[in-house]
Length: 430
Figure (cartoon, rainbow, N blue to C red):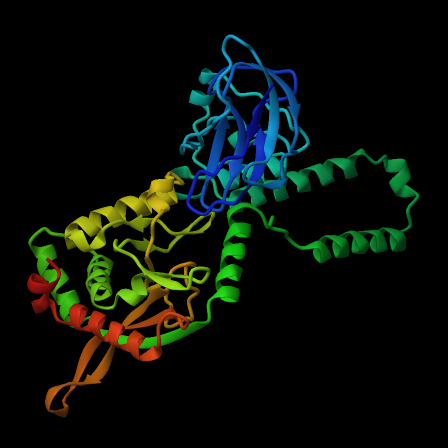
């Protein structure tokens, strides 16, 4: 017998939710054939079979969350083809690898290659999970997202229309004779009760998968770290002028790429913010690498891909890497390597319209900076003159166990100096 267990596939992973099984008890499987789909706090992954043989037992039902090391199912392996029960996760591609299944069926089978090619559907794993829970065939839905991508909203709208049609058909099935026996007051009260029942229930969103893991991590951070938030403003006028000059030369670089490079330079001067507190051993560990996490909003929730060795990259290289990671995050194609090793995190919420916040630190890091809205405003400049400048607000949250307010102010002042004075970049940001 071979026990298929949930294994750690990423930094800090402790548990995963069983989304659904591709096999049922009694099925014959081959080596590397996907057996079960698992949702971790960072991604959706498939657990392949370590051996050829027959599915003897499914130990954990879908929908349950289990810790790393838990046995999910048991295989009766073929002796000649049995392999060591060590598995690796396979990342789910944008194109579907399976047909949607009903939540009442824990025993789906994989579709043929021909059917998969005919039904190329763009939808995130979480969206597919919602479809399965509502017993919806995702192939019947037209996506309203980018490039026809199916969203969670599309699923809910489909379910509403489907339920409305089913209710209408049930009403038509009632005989005319029976309806005629119902007096008008009774019919009116009946209709009112039905409407009130529907209105009182409202809409429900499953609290599972990535959303649940985000909640756990945020709670852990707030309960563990004494947060302090420092607010500051930066004048981006010269930076934006410089970017426009680069555009005229055919060079397109985002302002955030400059921010990341400036952060890396500032962290070298204030390494306490590029550190992690080891309370057990009573030491503050200063990280040798400068890996900047980018808080990214996706359809399935917040995720933080990492730009590794940001201090060693040019601004243009950082821009290209940022663009690549953002695209992979939106398409749910990030790998563990893309998300591990972060030492400091930034969050660029300005494009969404934010003017301020008290961000939660990405535990176990020491600091996080959020960049907020940039807007033109009158500012007093040299000789007490008034000028219109582009001012960005930002908020920095830091771990007060590791650093103090004065150090945080000095750090943000250094960052401001770099992004407000492009003339320094050939010297400092090379």
